[in-house]
Image (cartoon, rainbow, N blue to C red):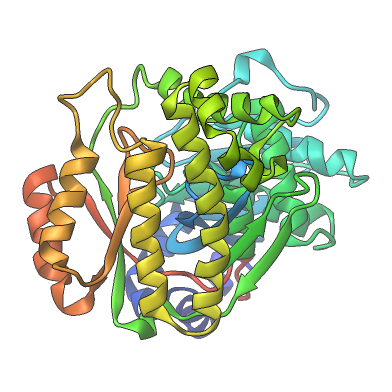
Length: 421
């Protein structure tokens, strides 16, 4: 498809499928992206369009690194990409507001100078497909994202999935399934980018909708897609960015899996998923003395949260949204009191998450639900707000944290895709 050949009718129909009633705004966004591609890489080329969503963690706070269960969902905010093949053996990707990355496919080993940069993710995805036996060639792509970096909605996983979906389309004939691409994204992030991430973010972005993932066998997690329409429940999913800084919090984040693994090691295990919960409870007096109360409390959170994910998934499958909301609140309560990742002891004056949770509780007055979202400390909260309270809630939250800090989301029913136009 060249831009001059774009059938606006088919284009609009596909955008309506992907974006629903946001179709008109997205049409302008896509046409602007196509214009940018042509301005950078030349006009008159055969274009292919891709989209990959961000994700939100629904349940399973800090369970994945202990091979536990998580519940996640893809969201309506996405990365979009306009792409076309080239014959240069180079992948060129220009992302809005970032410099262009040129990846020479003759070099598919990790490059130290690319660590923690987008270039490493592109190279890592290409290397993953090559290792799977596919001959990866060059292409040009322009991307722009509504999954803001640092928003807690996993912009990096969405970027990995859009690159992987493009490579799968151009050079693998669509042979790899979404979970296969997700695993390549995790490897790219671990081995090329240098971040020891789990697989939740990539899986949610690749598969789409509500997904329940069991990481008991971390090399082959069990993924179940749940058929639930959040929009029909009368609630809006909100993510509140409290604007807190993640600087100097590395040790706080690392302490959570570190303390959990110390408990696991007491039983000769590498992660808490391998530990018998009944034996752990029996040994609490000894474990308190050996590892301290916080480590014990964090392990207690893991065991309860890991089971809670199953109950949350069952509630959604049974269309019991009220029961689901009650479990969300229990998850938030456990994270606050036992996991203790809502604020850190070294910065007691900075408690933006606590403030956001308090304001949410005040407005909900027993309705809906809220919880810490993702890693915690200086990040975001998640809230389920009755539709009739959304305007009041957004105005109140943004009155405290600033305009644009309350994001109104919907759950997107599918993951990373090539648009059918």
